[in-house]
Length: 409
Image (cartoon, rainbow, N blue to C red):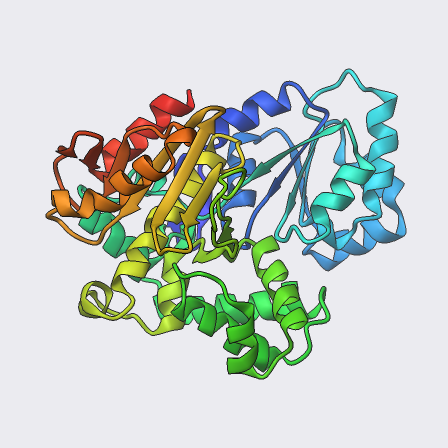
């Protein structure tokens, strides 16, 4: 089955398809969450062509689901996709009754939702033990390569930053990127924010999102945001929760368990679509991308967002951290794919990694030998992998994900 993405008739295989198939075979209900325009509906309608589809964005079906849920569910038949379930959360109690009547039937109902702040709780509370959860983000680099010729790390980074990773932007090259992002933000603000959350002044919220983009890849200091915007710290905290739940931003937590040293405990902030971050920060061309003041942070954002997508594509929560000590030692990314394994990663915007760049990783391994970290990886724009020191290797982007695939099993 082929579906329409904007004006282009195509379908790009998604990484979570195998995981979706397994969950449908083992659970009565499955929910696919993620940001707007990530391709949730397209994924499900392509993979499940025999399912009856209803979107609660349609006022007719939404009113029917709210006013007469039994009739709404009767009309769906044996297997159904219900899009934007957060618009009629009361429907879930009626779904539960139907599921309990035939607990042996797997894959009966599939839901999507564009925001998670409360949605996951509603699903878990209403359908406890009856539902499995999946999360879909905009295209990963592996998914984009199924449609675009992006042979090396420079091409992958440039395309993600300047063209974005949302499906419509990938498959329809005629789309005006800046106009699309402006419209996307307005839709997000009007539909997912104003109608669901009491956030106060939308202009202040927009200023906050732009300021976050300018500081992506940096440690989060809510007091600084409060001072710069003239907004209270509790408000900043609530806005961050909304952006995180909507999968606009990702907060990378610090790794500080039982280390016995003074460790920074503030998270670092990243956008889950670097194209949106560049749009907000005014980065419009390769000169600003590679030579502007945000260049290193943007490349770090790109590498972290793709690592997050790698694990979510496997149906796993990303086991990702960073570390910074009181003395200033910082490792950009710590990956814990399994108990007892810790992979330190340093991210550098360079095509020519040198042994000097491995110093941080070597110091980390020496300082935290009790963690038994694996050999360090220096991730850059290089085209070829090579050893830098006895315990640090420079890896290409492709080698990096191949290594993660190997250690994650």
